[in-house]
Image (cartoon, rainbow, N blue to C red; front, side, top):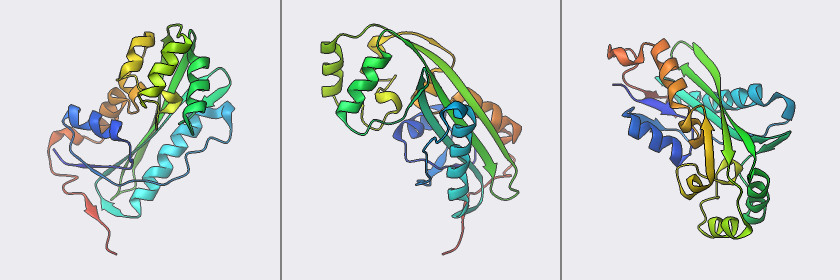
Length: 203
């Protein structure tokens, strides 16, 4: 199976691809992930994922390039990665005992042809009511850092989650089911060598 180019610095996305047995190389992206229009979250996360792919395509001329952008949405608020522990505490207080949605925009593009697919995965998450002590204990573990919404579903935060409707992996940061569908559109799993190898551009 050929490697894909992962345009992300997220260790969670690397972990998901490794567990799925999909080989990859990492091309970290510094593309702007800010969402300027909170009423258009779906299109915004897709656009952000595409920006990451565009940045990677400046360095790769062959291979399939994958970009993903994930945010947590509670009511009219978009919760990205908290700036500090205080903001993470505010996020968790909002999510406690409530329902929120996780949106992931995903883009896969063939560097050689420029052909690409774009999509969005949405998962609904219901949190148990969390006490102040629950939140404080969770924050002290440091798991909130670099996580959209200030929590990691695959970690201790699983204790507080009452129900998930949709993709669990989407909440982790990479909707694996949607990625599988998109890679099949590129006939990625047919092992015909079409995308072998990934190839970096020259200096």
